Length: 190
Image (cartoon, rainbow, N blue to C red; front, top):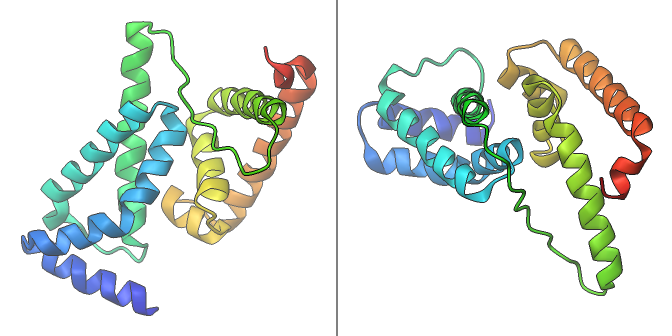
């Protein structure tokens, strides 16, 4: 067991007994990761902020029921986030809203405006393709590329074996390649 896992266990023990400061430490440790996950699943800054707050509100309300099942505490938070995002998508599909993509483009120094614009358009097109994937494949890509997790860590969060994660990853990349191949103009700005 690593030092950070041991500290998480100690903090979790205190938080489950109602220690608000201990829960605050868990919040500080995981809020950025959960926000990133939610943001990439929703594509909307305001909804991501709201859903992230709801993840931690739900976690705080149910922390006394948390049971260590041999997976990291973060897996529990990601599952809460996954469920809230799934509900959010379901509710949005009922409202028939037109999504507004407000992803910020963070230019690096020395980029020409044309290069930034082209990169932004390609990134937006790729994110649109990713958002068309089933939720489990979106979750996999976010955990792999945004959170930079290993297949074993992703497996713990998704409740799958490492081999199943590798297989899903391979199938997901093939599906994305086929989608890009079917729509070559997609990455040039639909």
